[in-house]
Amino acid sequence: VMMQRHPELVRTATLEGVAPTDAKTPFSFAADAQAALDSWFAACAAEPACAEAFSDPSQDLAKIMAELEQEPKLITVANPQTQSNAEIRLTPNAFAQTLRYMLYTPPQALNIPAFLNAAANGNWQPLGQSAFNIGYFLLGQLPMGLYLSVSCTEDVAQIPADTAGDQSGFLGDLRVRQELGACSKWTKGNLPDNFYTPEPSDIPVLLLSGERDPVTPQRWANHVQRFLTNSLNLEVPESAHSDMGLKNTECIRQMQSELLATASLENIKHASCLAGISRPGFVLEIPSDTRIAMSREQLKRFSGTYSMQNGGFQLVLELAEDGLMAIADGNSMQLTPIGPMRLKVAGAPAGDHFDFIEENGEIVGIDVVRSGASQLQLQKQSSAD
Image (cartoon, rainbow, N blue to C red; front, side, top):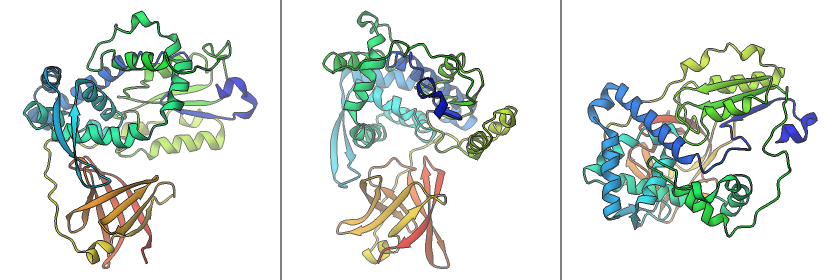
């Protein structure tokens, strides 16, 4: 849209997770989420350890959906901000939404076979905790009014009400029904006549899509590329809607930097570095994170400000009356010690924790671990007074 309205202001563009203006989201959500889930199931089947641990995740999924349709599950979960317990009611709709959002990042998706197998065998807590965390932190902070203003005007307006039932897969027509209902009561904006028909552009554009993206798969980039005569369309292996948790993703940043520096795609058209991107293995068992006792003086040594080497994300650990608190992006969460140098956010899935890095008796950084795999490292910038 920016390139069409103000081409003189755009020198280059990188689009990650391409969403065409004429995409009828959320009508495509069910098919794209099911395709991503099937791809992860196939990856599990191709990984000997995962195939041995979980012979048929799709059968576990069918069993879970049948049980929830018969009776929703009451599950006790931990509130990460208060460290108190809460009880949630996991309905079929809540489960479907939880599973869809777990597909957004590789670390979460790598938990899916284990979580489904646990629930199919009577342990609903991992799925319940994920449902609570997603609802509490992700969906609870989205500006839903802004989302509806965009979605109702651009996307839902293209969906005939009588086609809402043509959905399949684990999500079904849930999101279509929800948004059609919400948009029937929400004020819509006005679009220019050419909004759905982009004009051709020769601006250098790098298009990046995740191999298992549940919401903006590469077929959308293929659709957009027809109008971009000077574009490079790449699929990032093992990636989802985010490349969080993948190894060797520096390749992607290097390509973006090269495009910005040269305004040319020539030097990256034959880039083979994407083949070096890899992911951790699937989570094969759900470990038990047992809390250990730790004095306030012991907790105090972890307090301070931590950030990425190149800036950006910042994490502040503060010692409060109830223990050590982690503050990031305006959210405050209590940390639980589960090892001498390991703490986790209360209520976080097993395998998600902070491993503290020590040198010469001093804490110098944090290794952020998701699903048992290192995701990123933070360096300590300052200590608490």
